[in-house]
Amino acid sequence: MFNSVSYSNEAQTYYNNKYASTPVNAENKIAYKIKKGDNLWNIAKDHLNKKNASNAEISDMVYKIAKLNNKKSLEAANNIKVNDVIYLPGEQKSNPQRTSAAVAKQVSDPVKHAYAVSDKINDIITPKENLNYSQKALYKLQHISDIPESLYKEHAQAGVGYWDKTLSDPKNKFVISKSTSYSPVIYTGLSVIKKEDNNPYGRTESHLYIEVDGNGKVKELCYNVPGADVRDTSFDYKIDTNGNLYRNTGMFNNYKKIGQLSPAEYKALMQDAQQCFDKNVSNRIIK
Image (cartoon, rainbow, N blue to C red; front, side):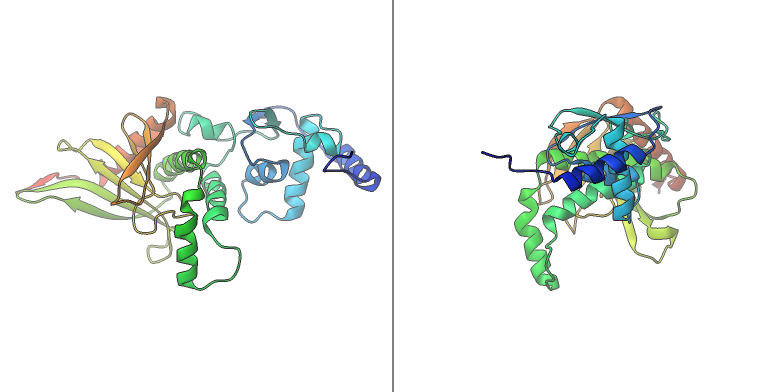
């Protein structure tokens, strides 16, 4: 009888040398709970917060994580289980009062984190082989059902952190359009589009819709997360003022509840959305 995974002496020696030569700062370490499908490679890639990180950069981060967690052998490094808590190196730079608390424990940049979680969605709904547009669309429709609810929730939460960061950054410029009812004209919502590199004629990065009640108070937000669109023609997620998260089911634009955030995780975003609406809609009623 033998183990399904074995490591050669050469591989272990290489690991030992890299492990010994890798510097790591244990101060301000960040707790991370292992999820289904995690391994040190994808954890390191996400933690780098770099969209086009090289394999060498990811590898260096793997050894930093391994050393921080005293994983002195290849076997120990690969022995991580769901719900285990490990520590990630580096200083957390995000503002915990303005960023989703769940996201802040894992990453220092909500925008890069949103793209990283979108990559997980794309791994499921995007074919690996080279197909034409129609074949890709069909593949996507056939595999949306493979997205687990836990990943939907993670993606929606990443969107909350992304939009909080994006709306509160004064450097961002948005393409704005107003939604109205009639007789008299009452503004009922605000469409906010973030373009890549703040180019108003460039490619859309992501889209948010701020829906308000008759008094002009935000009642829910519908949004997409940059890097992945699950439903091409409608918003993938929405959140209400109680922090309830919903995902689009694809059936007549219906939404299904997938989780609930704590006030600390969504109130800053709601405040940002209200300020955005008030700034862009000064006169609510036109007679």
